[in-house]
Image 1 (cartoon, rainbow, N blue to C red):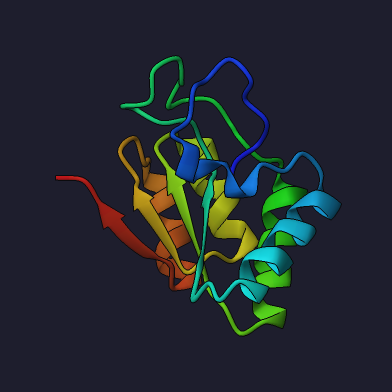
Image 2: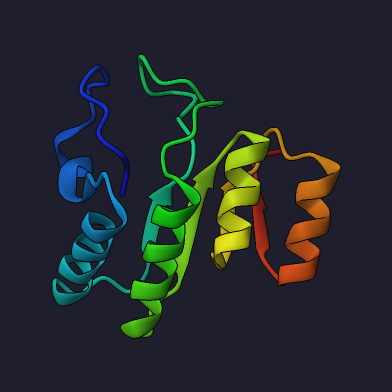
Length: 125
């Protein structure tokens, strides 16, 4: 799931979850859950290999991230966050995601938060 990014060309199969408010995030999580998703992956920051994306950009507000986690829990699903930039990583951890994918630019505070919250770091090495 990602925020609206009209200037970035996403592959067709990644358009299942654009959302731009906490309410839209909840709607997308519900749709994905009803379609049989076994987890929810959100883009907390931009990507490295997506043309036109900035890995340091923040894709969702803390409120939107919290909405994703809360709604996923209603369906017994966990949330993983794609995140490269420190602020996006920390926002996702504070929201309660199960894991951070990539964590490329994680800082000491992010590592401490992950440990405190029991958040897994699926890091690129």
